[in-house]
Image 1: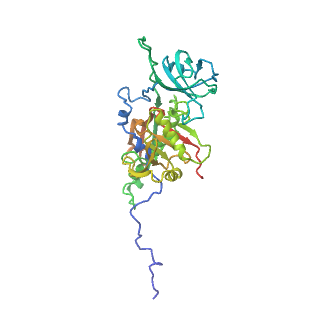
Image 2 (image 1 turned 120 degrees about the vertical axis):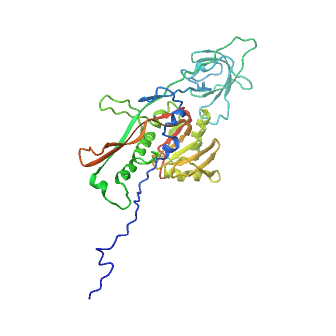
Length: 401
């Protein structure tokens, strides 16, 4: 009688299949959890009326600037200081101004101090060599002018201060949706690892709290790639702008926003952005980057780094926190972040605002035109970012050096 072996006679053997399906694809979207995308973000931006609407506006104001630039060289006897167009209104008689060479980024050496005696448009009348300084002929066009202090003469009449006007930045809402169709036969079949096929497929689009799944990642993508486009008549597409809609070289200085032109990231680059944010009155709470830069940052800080909790971000209970001369910042690894870019955020001044939060809806049940069951997940959101000078970004960083 022939011997029957287990490895040759397998027809009736039960298969050893684990009752779970492992998905290598990342599902979570870290920034959604960090910055928020629920209705409570309406409180963050003080949205109290007129919502929902397909256009969201919020109010911002800024402090009167303390700095400007010269627009012409000053010879040793000239008393008319010309400054950047539109900035003369920030100054008045009694101001003491210090002038630094534009290359002196540390403001180490004052070229000369001026006492302002009058202001007309963008020309300031000044007394040269104020205090312990002496008139010089080395002040060039483009040098930095800094308001240091101000004095009013005894028994003077009032002088009105320059008043800033609030602005209303805005963004549009964007609809995201996806549907799943499961045949009636498929919905009834028994499977390993799947108790309900419709639930399983819907969960890949959107999980219970919305911070994971394909649609979550598409919503998350607005932060990095969103461009603000008003809704058309037909088809009625509308797009929300992302980070770079609000943080540009026109709204934040080139110390906040700059390209490395494919050069390697340096520790000084991180400090440059954080210094600019602090100098503008802002605060950086988080630095966000991809894997290459996340590995590089610890090499800069050695003993000035620690691990701290980040309870908001699922799958990332602990993050690095670096200690810089300009404050502490948590470093968040985001696998969706463009590899050559690094973002500096204030978590309290950015986030997604829901027009209509993600919701699972039945499109067709028993009345489906086919024998299938059809459900969809749909949501409508916009993105808000207040006070752009509280943010920064470095682009085009080398990811090989």
